[in-house]
Length: 584
Image 1 (cartoon, rainbow, N blue to C red):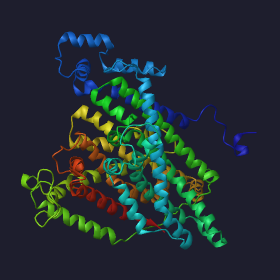
Image 2: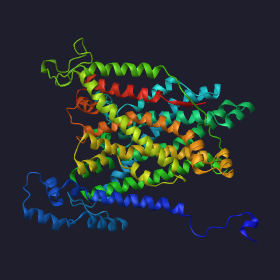
Image 3: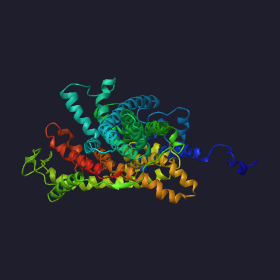
Image 4: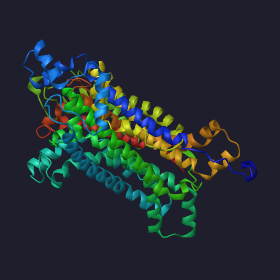
C-alpha cells in the first residue's frame, strides 16, 4: 500500500535537518568566539609577549631578550589562528592551558570561579523570580476576582526596581548594611551569609524586569478562551490563580533561565564591590591583562552554562505547557487596543522639563567653593565633587544616556523580533551562546578592536541586547504555532507570509515591543557600567552612568549626587514601562 493511499507521509530516514542546525549553529558560535578572543592582542595591535611582560612587571623595559624569553617560556603563538586551534585541541581533552601571567594551570581557577558565580547567580535568580511573583501577586489576585489584568502600582514598582543599577545597590548595601549596621560580611565568599547582599543587589533589579514580563504574559493569558470557560463553569479562585500563574510562568521561565545565564557573567560590578572571586570578575581581569588562555577558559565556561540554561528554559516551557503546545490546544489572543495612560505623560513631561532646564545651564562650570552643596535655589539639584551644577549635567547627560539606551533598545527590538518570529523551532543556539557573555566583556573586546568610545560601548551592548527579545518572541511564536486557528489556517492553504502578517506578528509584536521598552533603562545601565570601567563615556562626561560611577564614593556624605542620575534612570524606567499596548 502506498503512502498516498494511506494518507501518511513517507517516513524520513535519519535525523531531521532542523535538529542538526541548532547544534551546528551553537558549535560555530562557540568556535567563532574562541577565535575572536584569541585575536585580542592582534586586534589591539600589541605583541602578546609585550602584553604579558607589562602584566608581570609594568616597570620593566620591553627589550628583545625579555620578550624572546617570554615567547619561549609560554610557547606564545605567532598568529591568532594557530594559537586558537591549539587551545581548542587542548580544551577538547579538558586541558585549558596555563596562565600567561602567572604560569599556573587555568582549569582549577575557572572551576572554582564558576562554582562561586553559579551559586551567586542561582541565589540571585531565585531572588529575581520571587520578586517578580510578589510584585505580580496583587495583579494576579485582581485578575482572578474580576477577570481583568491591570494594576498601576505593580507597573510602577516593577519599573522602579528594574531601573536601579545593581552596582549602586551593591555600594549602598556595602556601606550601610555591611559596614554601618554590621549585619552582613563586607567581602569574600566563605558561605551563604556572603551571598545575601550580592544576591539582593543582582536579583532585585532583575526581579523588577521579570515582573513586567510576567504582567504581559498574565494579560495575554486572561484573553485566552479557557479562562472564560473556567470562569463560566465556576472553578474555585485558588484553582484559577494556580492555573494562571502556571500559564504565566510558562512564558517567563525561558527569561528566568536567561537571567541566570546573564547574571553568571554580568555580575562583574557586584563581584568587584564585594570582592567575590567569581567568573565574571575573573574574565574581566584576564581580559584587561590579555591573559588569553584564561579569557578563553572563562568564555568557554560562560558559553557552556548559557547553552545549558537556554535548553533548560525551553524544556521548562514545554513541560509547563504540556500537550497544548503540540496538540493545537492554545488560543492566544490577537485583539490589540492601545492603552491610554496619563501617568506616563505626567512623569515624562516632568522629566523633559528638568532636561530642558538643565540644557540651558552650563554643565562644565567648576566652582570649588561650592563642592558637594545640597540642593538650593542657585543649584536646584545640588552640586558634584567639583562644584558643577547637577541640574545642568543631568540635562546634558540625558541626550547621551537615554538617547543611547533608546537606540540600543530599538535595534534590539527589530533584530530580536525578526529572529525570534522567523525561527521555526525553539532550540538552544547562537542566542544562548551570546547571552552568556556580559556586556562588559563584549565591551572590552570591542574596545580592543576600535578603542574605548561611546560608540563602541553602544555597539557592545547592542550585540547582546537583542537576545532576551528574541527568546521572548521565540516563546510566544511557538505558542501561536501550536494554536488551533493557526493549524487550521495552514490546513486551509495559508502561505507563510499570510500567517506571519495575520497571526504571528499581531500576537508577538505587542508583548516584545513592551519588553523592549522596559529594557531601555537596563540597556542604559549596561552602558553606564562600561562608562564606569572607562570603556564608554569619559569619567568627566555628564552621561548618567559616568555621573553615577563618579558619585558613588560620596553616597553617604552627599547622597543627592547619586540620587540625581539614579532618579533619571528610575523615571525613564517608569515611563518606558507604562507606555504600552494591552490585549483585551
